[in-house]
View 1 (cartoon, helix red, strand yellow):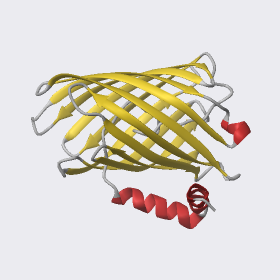
View 2: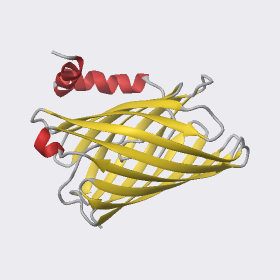
View 3: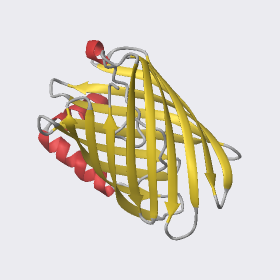
View 4: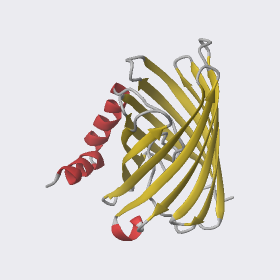
Length: 245
């Protein structure tokens, strides 16, 4: 058995799920960028047949240590395989160190259907501009390859990402992440996520609850981060998403 099937089988088992969620609290988080909710870093490669010519809108508030942020993210899905989304964020550091704004636009295309093949993969390309009181304006480009895998007939999904980030006037960073989700009740799914952006580490664990099935969702998660300079912080995130608008 190869390493990836062993990982998938371990997560599908109840003991494997518990171990994965416990490990999430032991890791420490990374940079945030345009994302596929409820995940902060990972992209997913799950094609939904009813996602065609439709809008979604997501918004979340986040606290990590002394940093507070508020983000909104509209997304338009052209076909089940192609989408365009934009994220706008406001960030405030309560220590007085910095305040800033960020805007990012992302294009994602999937190359196959997970419902047919049992897995999906695609390509995500994003461009971002960040403006802060301390550092002025900075830009970055991000390219990722997301892979999503169905874990048997459980409804659980494993998401794996690898890619590269190129900030303006800085060396490129390699990014990788792993995320998982599975049903805990008829209307709720638990999720966990781990990410590395260069030397920054990120982890979150949480629950997505559907207030209206496939239309209105509430996300709550706990997060931890360790930056490249060794600074550690923890906090939480609360988000709301509206779909098929």
